[in-house]
Image (cartoon, rainbow, N blue to C red; front, side, top):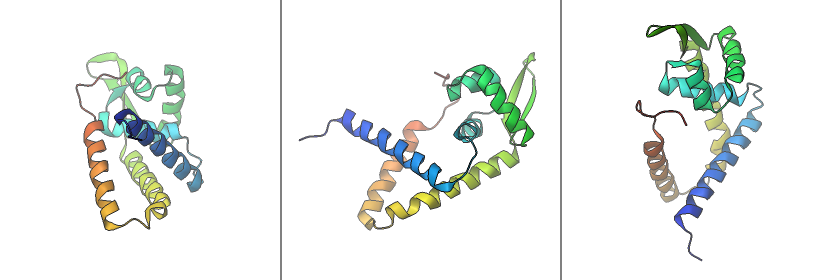
Length: 147
């Protein structure tokens, strides 16, 4: 049976979701995945207004307000007056937030690594090529608007 392109993309999405979910559970880390997602968004798209950040993270604005309040207390983000509109505030990732995000990604990488330990060099070449294709297609751009 021939696999359609849609089936390939679906398999990729489901498998990556399962891979990340399993890795997160294996770490034992109790930090909300919403924190990591928000830091990742800010890493590439900062600074953002609260509403923009909520839309990018696909949560309600009150939920993002609570999340940002906790992240401010933990020193992971800052909130500053928007120079273009003094009524608004911009949320930015801090150096501490970047360091925590980098450490979290390293933890996930080391947790997932053993699943791929038996791959051949050819398999690694395929995986590397696929990861570059995915990274190119999903790289954030400044002209995108949150969905």
